[in-house]
Length: 68
Image 1: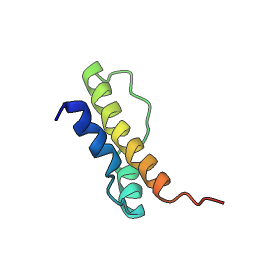
Image 2: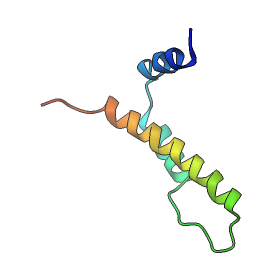
Image 3: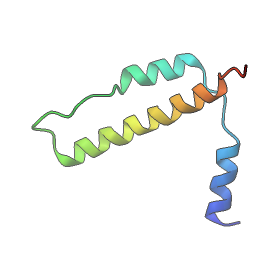
Image 4: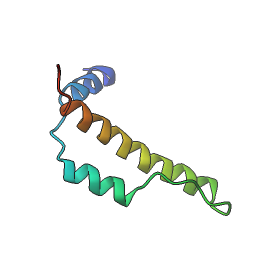
């Protein structure tokens, strides 16, 4: 099985994400502008943290959409 096939399988099988987890992660890793004295490495690290939170929020929203 190729890496691409494995990734596609993982994307199809998303875990149920509780609202409390989304809210907790959003509070722990808030969207924030970098400080002037932050290193490039720290900025990239925090962007990566926030990127994961945004992905989890997106999955949560998809799970809770109501089709009208």
